[in-house]
Length: 236
Image (tube, rainbow, N blue to C red; front, top):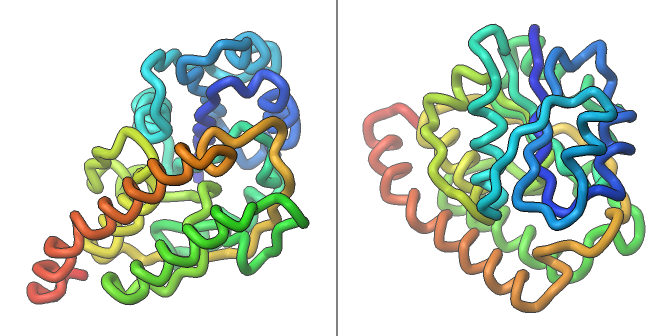
């Protein structure tokens, strides 16, 4: 099973090298860092640590993810998304890949709720928003999830068929909503979570929190009619 790790990075010069050093390279045949309009030097650090660097100058989390995925080739079986802020534990990559390798899942989400977050790693507004998003996904999409965590793995073929469109904060929920619409097998695995290096661009500000929350809820509601149609057809 060949794996590509895609790491969106915006102003993450101080942390991206640590993330790259902790990726178990035996489980990652390609590591791609996307410099998403940074004002510092994550691209230089990433190259020095052996990663392929992609330039996506227009800011946007989903936009950066798409730019990195576009650089994966057809030999890749699984795409992993990993943040550049050192909040996740890259050494847990094998646990994330295990359900896919066993033929039990198409999409695996690392759950910080199940695995545990150190004090201060998830501020109250991020926890509240995460609980609301998960509650909506369980209620509307029958998705048995506890977290919308960014550390996730998905079969590349399945990912390309999802035709991801979101360029900003709705990326993670769009992936889950479309996975449910397509009838993909979704699993969660426990992952740990720690304080990030630097200040969050989303949960670190009131404006960022409100923008992200609005986008996430809007994305969940936007794809719900499509999910209902898929249910009636027996696909989802």
